[in-house]
Amino acid sequence: MIQRIQSLYLVLGSVSIGSIYLLSDIWTGPAALKSSWFTAVTLGLSGICVVGGFVAVFLYKDRKRQKSVVVLLQVFTILALLTLFAGAYYGGSLPFIGTESDGVVEGIGLGLAATGYLFFFLARRAIDKDIELIKSVDRLR
Image (tube, rainbow, N blue to C red; front, side, top):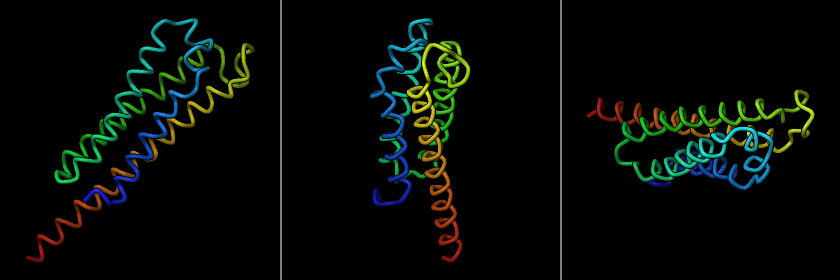
């Protein structure tokens, strides 16, 4: 069933991670200018999270596989969050640390990545509840 709550969580998590693409200062800011790896790694990790989130919506028939995909999405989201943080720290654009910028866009990017992780966590928890519900129904048979 695509109408389950975890499908909504997965879509919202993918949209929040995908919204990082809209922040142009992350791609052209101090972190991207100081380190050549930042843009490629951030694009790769967030792209995996976005595509994986939308793919996981359609794995509703195989809940165990859907759960394993969501766990991997959580790992990649943490890696993207750490990459954004490391890039902003290295670029000196975190609030109250650097003087090059005020860090608002970097803070929004970190917040969007954290929100994506939260939605993926809620999706995994809802999948676990579905698995337990199916197990309890099978026991009653």
